[in-house]
Length: 225
Image (tube, rainbow, N blue to C red):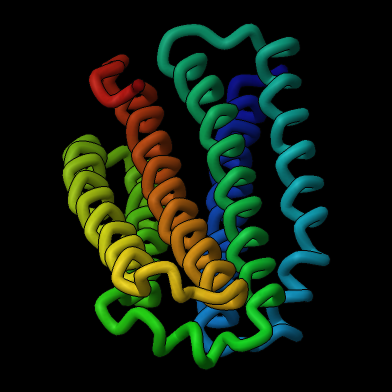
């Protein structure tokens, strides 16, 4: 295969992965909005559309495998393809977490009450921070920005601490109920804790993207864990 055609394949792979990330972040943003507003119709569409992300993941996985098998890349190209392969896995899992969030919205029959239940827990703000983290991680991948990869890891530490504080607030509220919480209240607690956990996981996947990007650019595995 001519060198210019091979380079074009590498370019298209990156562009296709960036397009997948745009779709995943859009779905995550809409799932967050559905969770906050109780928009069950939107949440149901997100759950029903999960197969689209899975299919896109499999297509890109096939592209990566094809480049490995047919081109036998070395050095920087090898790191780029290997990192891209890992990044699409993180994107697919973020898509799964968006589905989780949408499902919580569907399950919350009294979502308006739940939104008021924990005034100290701002799920929307937390969710927006994690979405921005994913977007910035993908921008680092798009532009080969090594500096941004370290900044993303540091910002995720802050998100982790926010999640821990939010979870403690929910648990304190449950303990303060002194055993008087009914089944609906316990379900609300469970959903809120699961939401916080899943948003924290989104941030972890953003760090994974940053780590693979750093490795791709500079053969540096410092952020890989």
